[in-house]
Image 1 (spheres, rainbow, N blue to C red):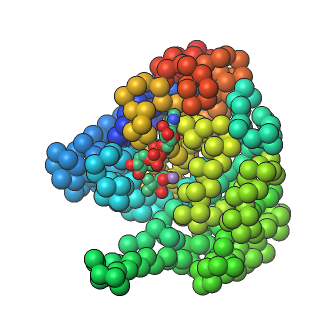
Image 2: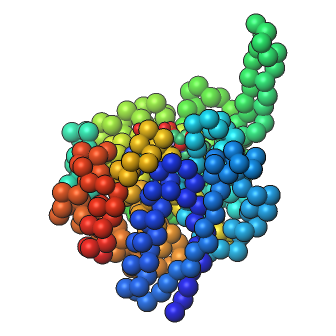
Image 3: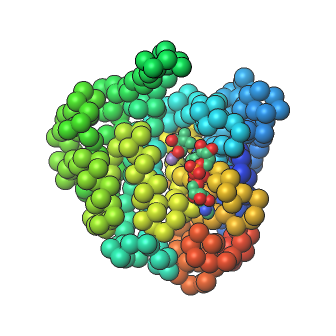
Length: 351
Ligand code: NAD
Ligand code: IPM
Ligand code: MN
């Protein structure tokens, strides 16, 4: 039996609560399709940081390099500054393993009440393609004149021709396989160097993908359209920061940030890709057993797809849709009173 070797990084808070459900789903669906998984679990987290002074060991990336994929819960804990925890674990993985595509699909499932009148179940089904290794997330910049009236902070954004082109090509190709429509999010009226550059590259790549109809929107107006007409989108491509914000907004449109999955992809497969829910460690609900595991379980489906297990992946998304459409099982973020475990058991029963 084929064995896929997976690195598990539960992380902090609800990260450690939503990862076991995702693992149970992988095992169950693998058994049905005749393949299996072996796991190596790493305790890399803010707790480790407090204990040992680092989020992961110095050779941490070497442990991951040999795995078929990485499944991560969430990182971040009150008391450890977020830029320390995230730049000590999540962001180095994304960058070192050239996971330059962050794929974040969203659907309004039958049986879920979107807070929006315009978001009818079954009609909202799109993907945010977020550039994942450059853009506004950069280490270039600094703080000057600390404590003085002239105190200032400077943060550079980095957009390279090759870095933007490769994520745009991915997004255009994805649009060609889906509904044939691509929307690019920029802010070229306010940010006058990087954003017009991105727009030019969209036009350039668009010319090579005549089967895709594309347009560009200012990010502010686009945010409003996500709320007013979410059903009109197919593939939305955006820079690192804009894609981050749009994907939480899209998740809220679909009923809860607890639903949304992410695939941090190295499309060339030179390095392992990483799968994780869009949400964070949610310290406000951690330890209560009520976190919504859908984001993590759907991320496991994206992992299956990446490993060439498309049928098994579809079984998982079908089971998510079925449990929402056919049962009353809902965690509190979706208005129900099921626990993480009760929801997961219900889903496993429909797999
Ligand atoms: P968050 O996503 O953790 O929480 C935002 C809100 O959504 C909270 O009210 C939370 O209870 C709710 N929520 C999130 N996931 C949920 C789920 N599965 N089920 C039910 N409710 C859910 O965002 P935040 O509060 O901005 O960040 C908390 C910490 O997580 C910070 O340290 C942040 O840096 C970190 N973070 C980590 C990641 C990651 O590891 N990928 C992503 C985002 C935030
Ligand atoms: C996400 C998170 C991270 C990001 C943070 C925690 C650094 O918000 O994965 O969406 O901005 O990439
Ligand atoms: Mn985010």
